[in-house]
Structure formats: structure tokens, C-alpha cells
Image (tube, rainbow, N blue to C red; front, side):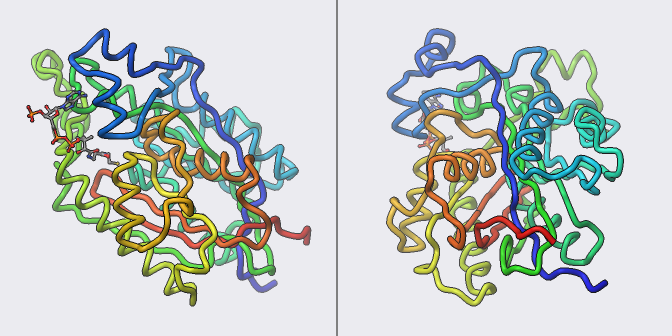
Length: 335
Ligand SMILES: CC(C)(COP(=O)(O)OP(=O)(O)OC[C@H]1O[C@@H](n2cnc3c(N)ncnc32)[C@H](O)[C@@H]1OP(=O)(O)O)[C@@H](O)C(=O)NCCC(=O)NCCS
């Protein structure tokens, strides 16, 4: 049998932790203010995971909802990808835990690490697996408990992030749906623009390094800002051109939700009105890999997407990494 040329998005799900932390609450703990956070980032609140809400827990909840919405049999799922930079454990993959939790006996499972670009990377890779014929029904989950990497005493980073998970089901189809064109990119020279230095094989955690709080993320915010705008714009323009389209054909842009000012700068550079951009970072903050699928989920649930619509997903993250996908929205017909 020849491989089907498309991978339709058939189901979607999301999950966030129970606890909401407002800007006002942070301002009681560190030297910041609701006004500073809102005006510099657009963020009002974020969900923060409790001890029982680790990455596989959120990923499993989002994956379960996506599978139920898609209406696919558990035995039909042949691949599980979890895009995360905050796995349950250094080893083995969180995707294996999720495969077990969801009871998917016929699925291979692996993690994908591309920081905040994880979902866009996963959608590109997952679509490739389906198009090649290697997978027919694939569960892609992007999940991060990024607050695990946060130093709550560091106001430069702690106000920006939240936790969550988003998921989609990809299914092989001959209909022209799902990802029409995509690209992924990386600039490894920028690896220390945003990083956690301690806890890996390069610098294992020692009591002295933990004492210096080196297990937490640090970031050069202004430089990241500039690279984010350029990376997302260039990759978005290329994906749209590779799909044989122009930007005017795009109904909705679902960008990585890091900072409202970054999204506004992308809109300006692409000469698109802000109404074309879906934004929900005010309620979630930057949920790392989960931000694009959580935004896509809310855009779909709020009725912003109907079958046939063209959606542009674009993201940027640590690595540095970036990527974009042009998606034709719509469910695959059963085959
Ligand atoms: C981090 C970011 C919000 C900072 O905004 P900015 O306008 O660039 O702010 P600046 O870096 O110029 O800092 C301005 C001042 O605010 C201070 N500041 C930083 N965080 C603060 C906070 N939470 N509350 C109050 N003041 C804060 C800084 O210390 C600095 O003070 P100084 O001038 O006395 O040194 C912004 O650069 C950004 O969003 N960058 C991208 C980060 C990102 O999205 N990373 C994830 C990528 S996936």
C-alpha cells in the first residue's frame, strides 16, 4: 500500500495544573509588580504544578482528551511523541510512561527536546512519520513543568513561565489536510542565551552548585527577544511560501506564547493585523512546548477554526530553536 500524502489533525486536548498564581501573589514574594509584568509581557497569571502534577500527569490528561475527541481506538495508536524539556526523570523517556498510562499497547514512544519549539518540531517530525507510512495514528503531546526549572527568587525569569500540556492526534489521510509545509531551525551558538547549566552530564549537580542555585534557568531576555522575532518571522515566511501560499491566505496565526510584545513585533514585521493572532498568554504565561498546542486547543474550542481554514503555527525557544508549520484544519475522513 502506498503511503498517504497527508497527516490530518483529528483530535486535541490540554491540561493545566489546578493552582493559579497571579501577578499580585508574585509581587508579595519578590520585588516586582502586576503593572511591570503586564506591561512588559502581557501575562496576568500562570498555572503552577503541585507535587502530584509532574510532566507525565499533565501529558497523560491532555493525551487522553485528544484521543477521546479523535475517537480512535487505543490499539490503533502506533506512535507516541512527548515534546518536553522537563521530563519526569532524566531516563527513561516520559513518552513511555504516558504510553503505559493511556494503555496504548501497539505504540512506540519517545521524547523530543526542542524547548519551547517542541510542539512545532513534533508536528513536523510526526507528519513526516505519517507521510512516510511508518505511522498511521500518532499521538503528539507537548508538556512542560517549566516552573521546576525556575528560581522563584529570580524576578528576571520567574514571572514569565507556567506549566501545562497540549496534545493532538495525527492520522493518515489522502485528503489535503494537516501540515502542508513546515521547517525547523536551530542556532546552537546561542545555547547559553537561555539554559540550565547544572544537572546534566556536562556539569552534574553537586551540593556546592546547588547551593549557588545553578540548577535553575537563566536567560538573556533582550537578546532572546530579538532572535525570537527574527526566527519566527523568517521561518513563518518560508513555511507559507513552501506551501505555495501567501500570508494573506492565513486565517489564524498561533504563535508561541512567550510575550505579547514579541507577538506584536512578529505581527508588525509580517504586516499582519493583531486580530489574526491568537493570544492566551495572559492566563497561562509561557508554558514552553505546551504553549502552541494549548493556544491551538483554545482557538478550536472557541470556534476560531473551521474545516478548511489555513493556520500558521510558529515558535521559538532555547537551543536556540525555532520552527513553523502551515496547517489546513479539518478532520480526516475514515479510511
Ligand atoms: C524578559 C523581558 C520581559 C524583559 O523586558 P525588557 O523590557 O527587555 O526589560 P529589561 O531587560 O530592559 O529590564 C528592565 C529592568 O526591569 C528589571 N526587571 C526584570 N524583571 C523584573 C520584574 N519581574 N519586575 C520588575 N522589574 C524587573 C530589570 O532588572 C531591569 O532593571 P535595570 O534597568 O535596573 O537593570 C523581555 O526581554 C523578554 O520577554 N524577553 C524574551 C524572553 C523570553 O520570552 N524567553 C523565553 C523564550 S522561549
